Length: 79
Image (tube, rainbow, N blue to C red; front, top):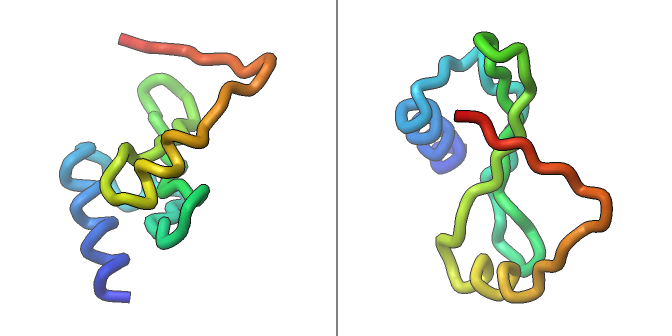
């Protein structure tokens, strides 16, 4: 539990978000094909943001190599 709290604190500090902006997070990715992610709220844009953490471990690298695309997926870049 202490490790999860540390990851969450680091994420919030790095992103500049507040606790109330973080709706859900899954920081664990202890196996292949598991992605660490968070769901946050961007109040200024009135948007829900899903963020996937980048490659950090060997399991992440294997997951990256196995990734594919999804037909019909939409991407929206802001900024």
